[in-house]
Length: 251
Image (tube, rainbow, N blue to C red; front, side, top):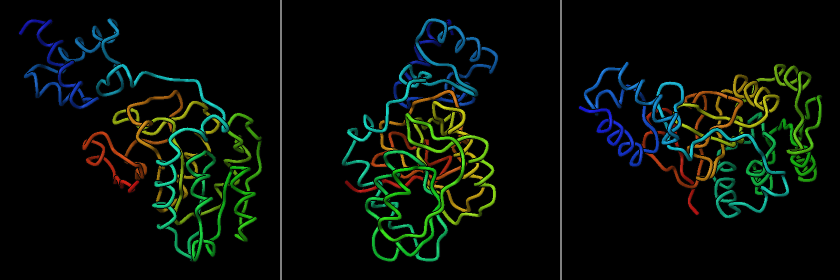
């Protein structure tokens, strides 16, 4: 098979699945791993795809770095975030010790908390989240650290050290990107470190991510895809459910 024919088949496969592993491409094209890796390198150079660890994604999974402010993000996907938030709130039991990450979807979760979920105890690195939890009468703990103005999140070494003192029954986190190969990612390494620590200290971790977050990759890795379950309004590909639990909220 000529290289141009392989290129066309690779791009056709990606147009259907949004992403593919090297092994999947080897099987689909009946080609060697070295051949597929060379093809991916060339297609990446041409800007036709993004070569990532273990495979490739379409260009809309390109690496992104910029992050909107909290105010800007609160006006995005409002209905989707609220549906996800309600589904997340339904998972909380009175005996839970819960970590809630900073972010707009997790803030929506705090906004809809009611009933027996208010009896749970909470830890959050979100300033707005802590204020609202306290106003609702919840017992809430806030880690030490540095306040990041862009996301109003407490980050830094002190925040990481604070979280290492806890064991959470559940953690609810945000992620800017959710990708089959790259996993859960975010723009800022310090925020990623706090999120990673929370995942490691939690018995059960849920990433609250609306459908626009899929096939996006940011510089800082939180955890691989199997490191947490996904709670979303719509999952764009069945491939995600092969690597981790996926729950879709009803709009």
